[in-house]
Length: 446
Image (cartoon, rainbow, N blue to C red; front, side, top):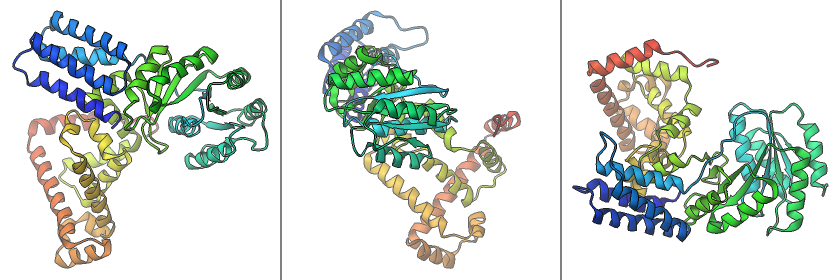
């Protein structure tokens, strides 16, 4: 998870409050010190940390909890609000016709991020074109072409040209009629006058509605001065912080950029083209504190779940029909939603209960179950009761597993059946669910 060390430290501080019999001055002081230590270890600016925690202590000791909220819940809410406050505002890049200019220094992940953003907008129904406008780095054109092929987005460029303006103007004609045009631009090893001059000229030529700075989060607090320099030069509309997965300096980069007034649009959380998350300070802090992010989980599910299939599967469950085929389909949908550890972080409290070993074992188990089911016949998937000793042996051989592992899958299937029977035995819950099915209306176009 992003900033895992910071998240653990903050969750430990929250636990002190949650487990306390009452909230007093001594507890608040102790928790404030824990929060200070956690933020400083995450490379957040010292002055910002001191100002934030001073305000946190004042509010925790003087503000009265709203009606119906305990003092412990109130202090936790204050911590959440203060942490959100240091991350500044976020920037949404809507799915609408626009031109986007990507700027930044060398080595920040600009070209890959252009591809990630193109994939995100393409997924949201936009007809997207990518422009290889980095005319100085020899491999930039080839890199963007390869990315374009992976995400089925066309790329325009001219590896023989050394004029960024020429490439940009020709790209506008090439992609006439497209919804979104994303321009990758040249970088430098440092913020130099010729770089600023070039991006100003290109920005004017393409008349970009969005000018996005791509910054490596590992630069920590130095991300602030870089963001300010680009912001002053071209009027940034947003920032994307890359390499946020596991970086100890991510907190420093986030807070430093927020201080410049340049809103953060996305954070890059991995090397794959789908590893780009829309940045929402409130939801980001909720996940850091172990409060989960149900909204993000629903969004992830909506991208891979066919509504009609989901409705049909639910009806089958209600009628008591649940086969290994249904179980297989559920596992495929789960895998499509992303890494298991990422999903666990979206569920309140679950990430705290899962160790790295738990996550790895669960992922291995699910992958093995799918391999085993791939070795079954359609008849066996639809009627698991027919799988006896001889079939178990055949399936084990075909899947390269053991008979014990095949029986483990069947045992898991039986446990799922029993769990559903227990649910179906609850009449009240069943009536509520049936009412939802009755009122269900598929989304338009589904």
